[in-house]
Image (cartoon, rainbow, N blue to C red):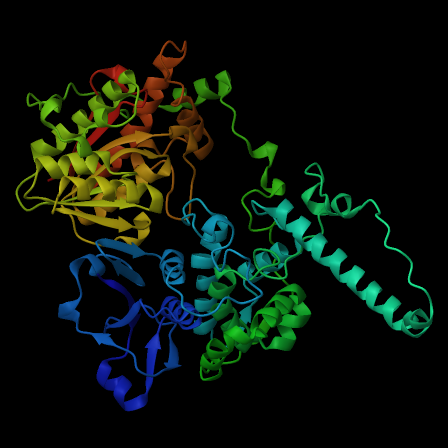
Length: 602
């Protein structure tokens, strides 16, 4: 069974044999450090050499006994993703945090007393589990901080303090906000009380030991204990008053997050100097010192002694202004009622009045004459085999049938079909069964969902299905058809962009129009045709598009707003030379979100 991690290097095997060092990017360095700490003997590291030096922020690492893999021997699944990448059994896992979590599961090193009882992955094994698309914390560890450190490595002489460093400093001074924070507060209180009682007892014994020897010992009396009452922590107590502080990044215990952050912060310390960081970012310096002093990190600390980083002179000693919030998504200070978007009738009308004739794409009566008999579809690909109510089975079957028939009409033998945001793979598995000579990739960032799909594929004995546990960003492989059923909010736009980039056909049924929002990669409106709409007007239409439930008095207007957003997406694809059809699922009652975008490149 394969259990391999592929890391990127810009040094060849011959260069390594001559110098004993390799040039690697930050992602490879962090993954190597995690593997070094965990001593994961079951997980094999393989370095992939590339001469295409896109990433110029490189570090020279002195290491021994590393294994290179020839380019021609790299599995196609691995080369379809951004490094670092795990090839485990039949599953590809990519993304720095997801790969690091995988390595932790196979650690053979002893657990540090600084770790929680559950180990590096913490409470319910949830440390860095959420993908960076939805988690502020994962995005900080996996993207934001690394980008800042890369800028430091590329900096010439005068640089400014990166905002990400200030964000982490603010995070450390805020209350700990994790799922089991009240349990941790009780345990810490118990340790404190036990320590105080023990010290008190020792003092009494040492002070009166001589006199007690000459006196008659009193009988033991039963006293009512107040220990339980002392240990109580009322759940009504505010988190700010629990006295649980950030000794480490996620609270009082050392977790995988600290291990991932430790490598880039070593570079920060070498770039600015520890004295500068101690004066500018005292809590960060304290966290770094706590982490560095752990004896279990001895072999990792040794690695950084051999890494040379050019010291930088700081142009501006003042810290940049950032929002004074933690990196927890649940921080109440992130909630700003003034920024909430309400779909007021007058705002909706004003937004719709901006639209001009010819901007909206007309709905097509697209239909396919073919059909298939659900009675012959095996249980693994049939919604009726699950534990759904009959009405839900009918609706789900119709949704799958609409998209599946669209794919069958455009697919040809040998095509690679990617089911983006596949969940547990209902659509992709059905297509794989009906198109045995096509390769189907199930791509999902949630581990539990993908595991359920894998079980069904194994039960059916399908040989043309591959599993990719990763974000959309980390998949860079070639494919012929991209599909997505109810990819939420901006995910539908990210899928569309992937298809346009690969010049692939697409079949997309969008969802959650009300959760659309501008990001560093997505700008709304998507096409130049709708450029007259402001971002606020566009999002207002998106919110209105979610008012499409059956028997809702505003469902007609909601359906039009849905069509407006999807028309914008279609106009973008047309600019790339696509022929796009906007139609609706049949029957309309199978789902309130029943628009279907089908695109074929010219």
